[in-house]
Amino acid sequence: MARRLSIGQLRVQEIIHRDGRRSHTIVQPAGGVHAGAERFLSQYAGTGSDRPYAYLLVDHLRWLEHEGLAPEEVGFRDLERYMGAVGAKVAAPLRSPWRVGKRPYGDSALSSAASCLKGFYLRQAELGINTELAETLDKRRMPTRQDRDRALLGHITKDMAANPLAPRRIRRRHPKMLPDGARGLLLPVVNSARDRLVVNWLSDGGFRVGELCGLHLCDLHLRERAGCGECRTPHVHVCHREGLPNGARAKTKRPWELTDGTIRGGLIKRVSPAMIHAYFDYLTGEYPRGASHGMLLVQQHGADRGLPWAPEGVRKMIARAAARAGLGKLRPHAFRHSFATAVLDASDGNLVVTRDAGGWASTQVVDEIYAHVDVNDPVFNAALLKTWGE
Image 1 (cartoon, rainbow, N blue to C red):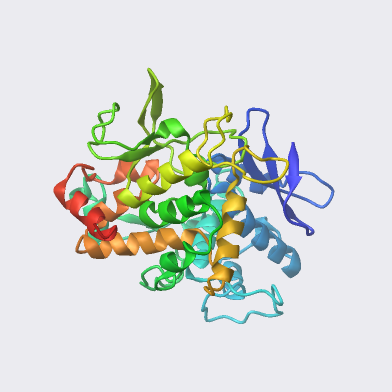
Image 2 (image 1 turned 90 degrees about the vertical axis):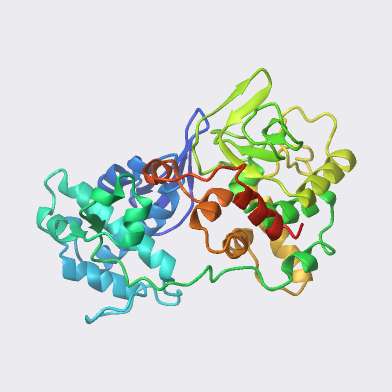
C-alpha cells in the first residue's frame, strides 16, 4: 500500500509493506518510481533515515528539473549552486530564485543535504554514471583528535571521509531547546495523567517521540534489581519493533529478546522518580483494563479510544499545551535537546555519558566507537540524579 505525502512534479511516497514495514521512495508524475532515487533510498529502508533523505533528495531533483539538468550531467559547481539555493553560503551566482516563499535550510538540514547528495551521486557512480563528479565528492581528510578518540583503533587511523559540499560547521549547543521553565508551565495545563506522563518522560528520559509511543508495558522495569539483570536501578528497554498499530518505531536497532516474560537488550534508559510517579498515576487512574495490545500510551477519546496513541497525537498534544502555557510553538524533540544539554552540564562535559544516557548513537556508530558507558557507573548515576534534581 502506498500513500502520497507530498504533491509536485516529483513527489515522496510512503510504502507500507504487508509485514508492517515502512519505506519511502520518489515517484515521477506518471507514477513510476525514480530509479536513481530508489537505488539510493533503498539502502536506508527501515532505518529512519530514508524519510528525511527522500525529502532532501526530492528537493534536489526538482531543482535539477528547474535548471534543465539531468543527474548524469551534473557537475560539482552545479551542486555548489544548489547548496547556495537552499541556504548555504557559497561564492557562486545562484541564477533564478529557488523555493520561493520557503525558508532556507538550517545548519543541520544543510549538513544532511550535503550527505544525501554525496551518497546519491556516489551510488550513481557505482553504475558508471557521472564518475567524474563522484571522484570530486569522494574526498578524504586528516582525522582530528576527537575523531581518533571516537574511532575503534583510532590511534592508527590515517584519514577520514570528507564531504566538500558540507557547510562549515558552526558549533552550537542544541539551538532548539525548551524555553526556561517549560516543564513547570506545561504540567499544570495538560489535561490528563497520560499527558503528564508524556511531559515527565520526555523531560527526564530524552526519548524520541517514536521511542516513547512504541513502548510496551513489558519494556518497563521500574523497580530496583529487575529480572533482566542488565541495570540495577529502574529503567526501560527501548526495542525496535516494526508494524506497530500506531506507526511508532524506535530509531535505534539494538538487539533485544523476550525470554520467560522478561525483556532483555535494546537501548536501556534510566528512569527518574518523577517518571515512576507519573507512570503509576496514569496506570492506576486512566489505563484501560481491557487493553490487549500491551502498549503504554493509549487514545483516551473518540472512536479509537483504548487503541495505541500515535506519535502525531503526542506532537499535537504538546503543541496545544504549549499554546495554553504561552510557550509558542513547541515540538517533542525540544525535550531531547534540553535533556542532552542538562546531562552534558551535569557530567562536566562527559560526551560518553551523555551519548549513552540518551541513546544518540545508531548501531553502526556504536560499533565504531571505542568506549561504552556502564549504566551502573557512579559518574553516570550522579549525572542523571543531578539532572533530575534528586
